[in-house]
Amino acid sequence: MSRLVKHAADRLLALGFLLASSPALAAIAAWILVDDGRPVLLRQRRAGLGAKPFQMFKFRTMVPDAIERGRALGMEDPYGVLKDDPRITRSGRFLRRSGLDELPQLLNVLRGEMSLVGPRPDLVEQVAHYTESDRRRLAVRPGITGWSQIHGREEMAWPERIAQDIWYVEHWSLALDLKIVLRTFGQLLREEPEPVVDTMNIERARQAARRA
Image (cartoon, rainbow, N blue to C red; front, side, top):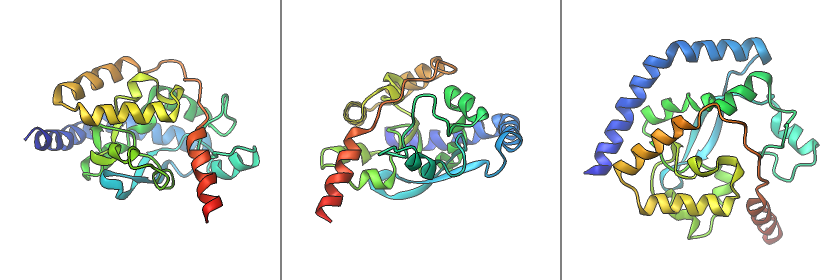
């Protein structure tokens, strides 16, 4: 029953937040257009509940060819972020620090692909390298914010992030979700975290390439 309440509340709250924030959404879209042109929204193929792929929305915070530029910079994980990353736009730096770049994911919540609270959705390519233990984080819908998000975000190494997300799945309650939401608001506009290189997924990708 609690899961049904969560799913229904997610959609109702997402609709309310979308309506209330529509002026801010329009202003952010206009800022991105003026600052760096189109596209305003970024669509990424992410893994949802049970690893089912879906298109996740967010405001674009990097240059359009960020992946190619990342490879040109010699990044083994071009989906990651560098300190003082030159690929992040002026508007993007503020949007990432404030978390406002995630607002379009309210559409994903409204569509039933995401929840307001849950493990952050990984790229489909990363999920392909999950161990059986890692896949436990896919037992719930991914969220806009989550337990690992309020315990370090990008400052946390991937093995620790997965462990935090699995803890959330195993200890989930409506009260825990409320606690996470309240602590998320407390982290808005904090300093941009020091990025951590995703060595785990890099090594797993290497191993997969060697087996291919």
